[in-house]
View 1 (spheres, helix red, strand yellow):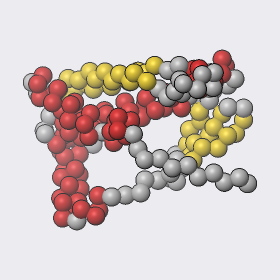
View 2 (cartoon, rainbow, N blue to C red):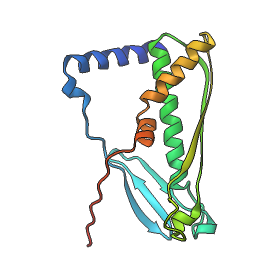
View 3 (tube, helix red, strand yellow):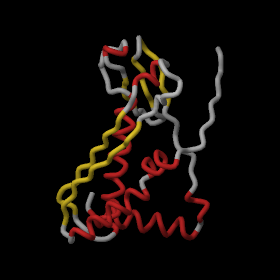
View 4 (tube, rainbow, N blue to C red):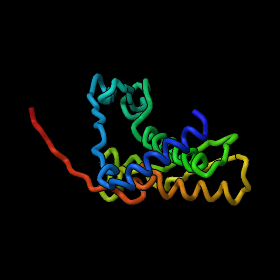
Amino acid sequence: MSDATIRDAIERLGAAISGDPGKARARNAPASARLTEDLKCEVTGPHGERFVTDMPPAMGGTATGPGPGWLLRGALASCTATVVAMRAAKLGVTLQMLEVAVESESDNRGLLGLDDSISAGLGALRTRVKIRGNAESHILRGIVLWAEAHSPVGCTVRQGAASALEIIVD
């Protein structure tokens, strides 16, 4: 898809939402995980999306798929890259190279329940963006900063989302 096609799509959607802000709100399709064997989970979506997660052998898994934490980092990296590309296209900047890497730290004592004062959550998230395009470096930096502030996954991770838990014992 060309930059112009992306720009046109973004402008059409923006105009439609500006004309009727109610169109901006959506309930996102669910992702469902089903434990299949040991620590393997099959994750599916409503349109045939599918992937398998697993844990490393040190945790009792067989490492036949990525761990959920890696997928979270991948979601943040790909969402940031997508929003950078969308913003660049909107501004008429052609990207020759874009790479986004996300790292984190964790303390397995939280996951294993060895110390309840230690969170099982990932911490110290670091996003590194390498970018090259047909614009001056300050424009490219501005695109990346704008994208970080508007990435849905990034905003969710930074701000936290209201969360509810429903338990059905079957």
